[in-house]
Image (cartoon, rainbow, N blue to C red; front, side, top):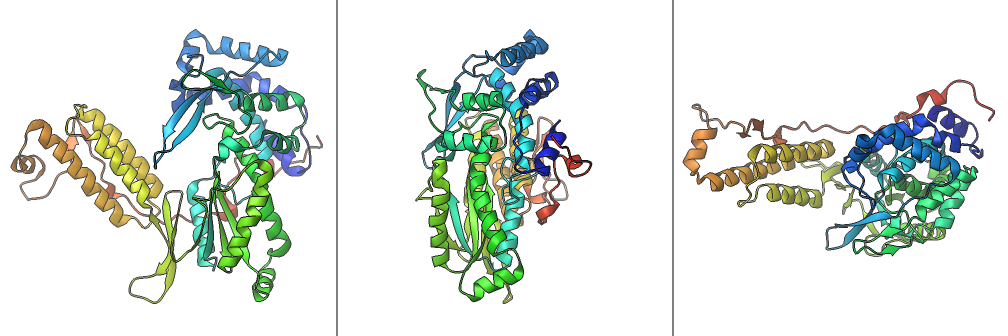
Length: 464
């Protein structure tokens, strides 16, 4: 089903899909939607109705999905307000998450299964966030490529409260450009207007935005922000498509620029001057204004690549290679992820903690492995080794304090007769060694990023 939808969307970018509501209500779609919802870590979190995925499995999945399908068919389905959860952010700020009910999550997942292949046909290659087969490392690799090709001025942009401010009318207009099935449009609008049940038990109406936490929210946010991708793609196609065009522009003192976006965080790489970047900042503001979005004055900055900037946890800087006169673009780990990792390890290894060693080491290893897998493509060997030393000492001091052990006792425990140190092992779990993580360069994939629906690129074109 997804392959066919994607094929039809690719065949005609102006085609508007009708009668896709039947796909949403299809039993197979609903079953797959429930499996994805139940397979998520969030399945253990209940919405305002207090029901979890395990409760649905206990009472009967088939009966529950049949009830959803019947309500969708008769038009009786109404999404409940999302449960508000405020998550602390660095700097003392709070991020609002909206937790839908399990039933609403299933319907949202079904909608996503149908809408995603349609809109993926229109999304631009410069967008990487919350899209299938795309990841943050692709965005970093593209920035690395552009920086190496002379795009040294950077507009580092952050949209202020993006998920909370998207204009519903403007968003629905972009959805209608591809979908004309009124029942599907009504469902999408119903989720946008579902409201929020605050932590104090008050219900607030949602007049704008797509609350973070919903399965459909990232796709809707990408649909809204694709207005920026289209703006960049149109400028590139009309004025900067070929190398000769770009050379002409630079000869006339005009800039060339590229957009790299990951959800609501994006950068514009400019081959030009600071004045060109400032001018682009104004243009970007004008493009986003109809969607109800504004740039964050505090977080939107103009920087030169030689000064470096942080993006998606990495610090990207153009600098001279030590011992040579050659300059290269380097990707390091930013300070904030390192501090966040240390804070998590400190929490798990507090001296007064009575957490079981096995449980603690399993959780520490999970954190370290996930962190290492994300940052192993940066220039990070020394950082990894220093962090391993930090984690090693935190665990050692924790054990010494709990058991009143001396340093000599630690040496008898962990040193071999030959004087070598053995890995820390507690409760049958060995501490993960960050220092042994293999650092590899992430290769820029460009147009080689595989499609989630490769069959849609071949075969006969439908006339639907």
